[in-house]
Length: 191
Ligand code: SF4
Ligand code: SF4
Image (cartoon, rainbow, N blue to C red; front, side, top):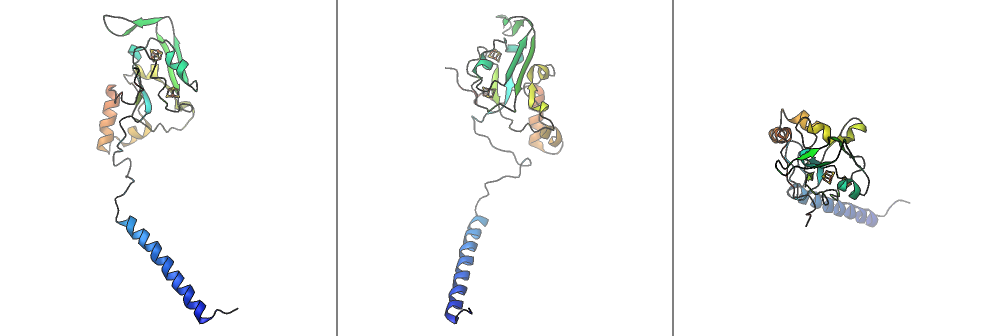
């Protein structure tokens, strides 16, 4: 049925009104401050207690299994050749060899519960959030192995790739290569 002139103008008014409302919302957000950033060219600001990929001080680990026992998803794997304990003179773990300290990041939920019972305060929540890789196997980080290269935490693929062109990423790579800890603010305080 053909519309009447009255209906025609009603529809026209309704269309103009809805377009105006839409444009008003668009204009409001067009001139407001952006909430996204051009990552990784711009640096992300993390909350002080952000919990990322762990940082591990193998030289202080006595392989007591307390962290593994407190992990709700059983994703920490530890092996040693013989008992280890802290040498009071050096403050470092001595005795048997730490054969394996690995965390499976396919399962880890970054709850930080593993940091709480550690008697030597050697496992921390770090600041790196991106461990993207090409295989599932690479999601299992062998911390005792990377310690042999002086690393406390793995160097992510994106850091390797962007360090040559982005200044803050180059600094982050330098920190990781030096084995410097980001912060321990993300750990659950033990007392
Ligand atoms: S952060 Fe939580 S889930 Fe991840 S290893 Fe530690 S205890 Fe397990
Ligand atoms: S609780 Fe600490 S010392 Fe014990 S195995 Fe875990 S990281 Fe090592």
